[in-house]
Image (cartoon, rainbow, N blue to C red):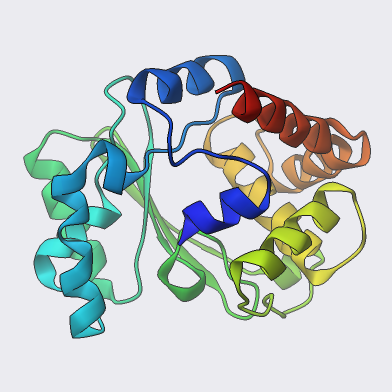
Length: 218
């Protein structure tokens, strides 16, 4: 669970109240909703998915649900094309016109490097299909190894310290894409360079330190 990775990074976010989550979002531009505490009804779906061993149809809402009410662009990860179709249809029924779908690494919203990333971008009444290959942007076709929370946290810390690794490469690949997707850069290549500058300058590591300090106060 992601909460375990946050904990390994020194962030105690499982005990925050929703007001504190909102405060983090306003001050640090990062918020984390912990289902068991904040939305136990949604958490009640999780055991069914774990017992079945795959995601039952109703649990597909986990891929689309957002607790934020303001202007946003929701990104949903998927594995199978029918799931993407369900996501698009559900958003259409609810009048949500700003979203993206990503056939990501292990079904997440992380762009893979071992294969072409298949992406859908919906803005207004226009849906655009995009395919991206990490190789075309100078990265090898190698995904990071799946590991436990403590090992992943160690890799994150190493990457934020700008220590060369495949994990850092995947971080740059994804940061570049999302900086571009959210309109902070007009070109993915330039966005990747900007992401490297953020890490090289120590700004990314400082952000983690700031979040740790804030977590202690809470």
